[in-house]
Amino acid sequence: MNKVNVPKEVKTYCPKCKVHQIHSVTLYKPGKRRALAHGERHHAREKKGYGGQKYPLQREFAKTTKKQTLRLKCKVCNYMRHKDGIRLRKLVIQ
Image 1 (cartoon, rainbow, N blue to C red):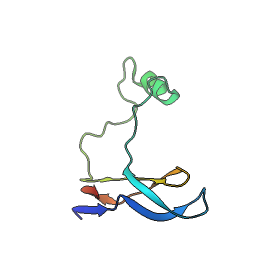
Image 2: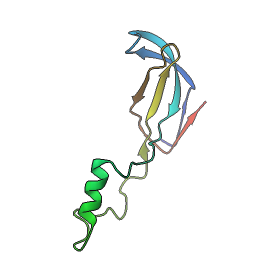
Image 3: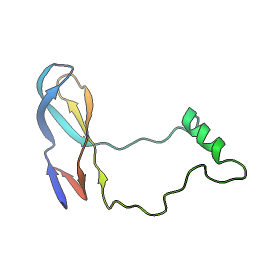
């Protein structure tokens, strides 16, 4: 599977409105990681000093693609939800 075309707007179920509504579709991108979050501080503490990593670093990836996550935003109530995507090389929102 090389390229998948996804429409900009799709009619699907909105859990907040409890009825099918038109949703705008965008690609989900994770934000910047917070350096002061508990997990980040724990990870930094584990790595600090002698002894190296607590778990092996992944040197090369076995997978050639990533799962793309779609972000659906309801046009009526602006409720946003994520839809787990499928593995693909390229996702085109038309």
